[in-house]
Length: 276
Image 1 (cartoon, rainbow, N blue to C red):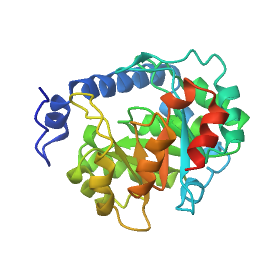
Image 2: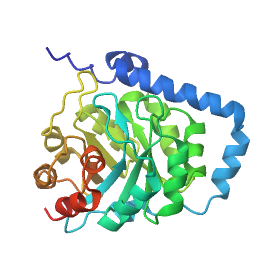
Image 3: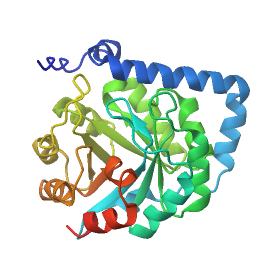
């Protein structure tokens, strides 16, 4: 039996307790960042972030167009599916994504359950010239600075994981560093919170944070709440070109695809998805 959804507008702590897997992932990611902080002090990472070349314009790369755009993900594993692909050379996979027509690349940097790292992001940055998303469980300014220092142009912020003041401050920092934020939502209240902070890219994740079930129709129920001028990104529940077409028909400007690419030929699969 599916769990009841969390009531809206509760504190971040209460919302996370409704989503124990998300709570675990966020706590683990922040804890790992605190360990890295002991090795690379805040000032060192801040200086590295400020000294990077300017971030690429992800908003332009993902802007609405006459055909759907793909945000292609480098993803070795997930809590719901376990191991997906070894991906011993993330840079080579990223080159394939770029050659196949992806508009941007998502690099999972969470290590405990997704088996990613900031090293993956750095290697991918050196290999491709399209925008990169640091996809992780971001809860602190240090993690945002790490993203820019490693070459990210976008940073994921999950509304369900953050109270509004933290969401605002992290979103502001991302913009101050010249990056863009992909603000991920799962329901109407979260879409409202994302728009309240002025999000320019709003994602709707089809995966229920409590049950991990997928609802491919969730995007369609929320898309009209995202105004024109804001990039609409559909996330999860993509296996075939028909799934991409479903999201496109519901109003998606961009579809984030991970598992379908890492478990199939990426260039062929991207070609099929971009042809919808």
